[in-house]
Every structure is written in structure tokens, then in C-alpha cells.
Amino acid sequence: MYLETSILSYLVARPSRDLVTAARQELTREWWEQRRALFDVYVSEAVIAEARAGDSEAAARRLAILADLPLLEVTPEVNRLARALAKALQLPKYAAADAVHVATAACHGIEFLLTWNSTHIANAELRPTIDEVSRSSGYTPPILCTPDELMGG
Image 1 (cartoon, rainbow, N blue to C red):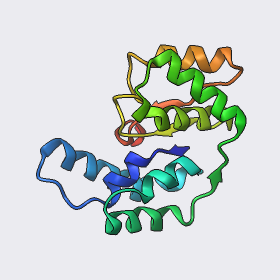
Image 2 (image 1 turned 60 degrees about the vertical axis):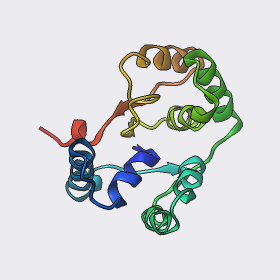
Image 3 (image 1 turned 60 degrees about the horizontal axis):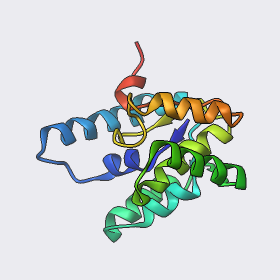
Image 4 (image 1 turned 30 degrees about the vertical axis):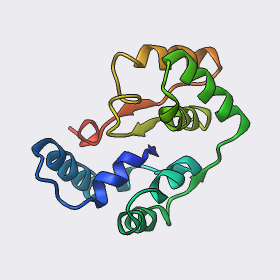
């Protein structure tokens, strides 16, 4: 499993008063405590770069979680696939890292990409394009999902 940065953010954030955000925070904590051990969890250099950004206290909490997770390299192949995804999806420049996350998971043969980013990653409208570009580039796309989808049955 590839752990995208939004999961870390929800995991370590102060409790939100927004009901949707608070529910996502709780689901993320439940998944982390109850289900994480069932998966080999990986991150990339892109996750580390995003985790370092923002409030220094929150960044320190995010980086502490990342300290024990194996790192997947952002290779030239990853960058090529990320560029192809960003172009096909018409991603804005600020969302370039989202394409890198998907490409990293695909190029490294990761089965699941766990995220709360439903704008550019776990988005049903974008999924066919992500799948098509990944497969035409020779990679199996990861299953793009949120923690509630991996709580078991």
C-alpha cells in the first residue's frame, strides 16, 4: 500500500469541528490502529516533501510517522508516467505531486493507494483515464481508495 500525504494529515491533525473532517479523522485513526498492520505500507520522496510543509508542529508529527515507513524511489519512469497522467488528466500545476503519487504506486507495483484526496486521486471520474494511461504505459494502476473502503468486511 502507498500512503498518500492526506492520510498523514488527517491522522495527526487536531480534532476538527467540521463534521465531515472529524469523521475522516476518526476513520483514519481507526484504520491506522485496526487495519494498518495487515498491509505493507510505503511512501515516497513526494510524501516526505509534502509532509514537511506547513505548520512546523504538525509537520513534525507527520514526519515522525514516516520515520519507520519504507521509501519508494521517484525514478525517471515514475516521472515519465506522472507527466503523462498530469497531461491526460489536465491537472493544474499545483497538483503535479498528485500525479507523482499515482505514478509511484503504479511503477512500483503497489496494489493500493490510500488517500483522502478525492479531487485529483480517488475520483471516480478520473479513474478511467488514470487506468488507461497507466496500462498504456505498461503499468497496472493501483486501487485508489479511502480508509473507510479498507475497513474490512
